[in-house]
Length: 132
Image (cartoon, rainbow, N blue to C red; front, top):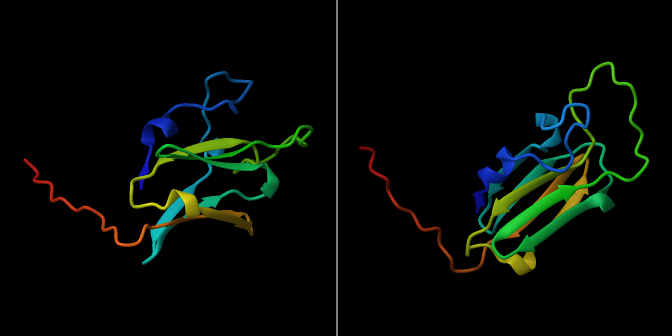
């Protein structure tokens, strides 16, 4: 599994309307990924969201996780704002070791956990890179 960095560098449709083109880090949900013997586990930090508004899609080798807040979502006059409950979109490239038909997700305690099972009998190809 590989993180699609080019997607993160580009903005998304949930930009700041007061400052067009301005990309806040708050609009990118933080993601941690760890590997177990049978899967990759992706933890998306997304507090204060409504689980029915997450969208997880696999198209070809690309996994996309997005969130769209409901219409009429309250927008208070913030005094301090260190995280956003707004929309986001993250993309990741999946390799052939992931069983795309068995991906599952659950949302609890502000964290969306996406389980990416590894296909049985596949081993990650390892190649040593020589630094010149």
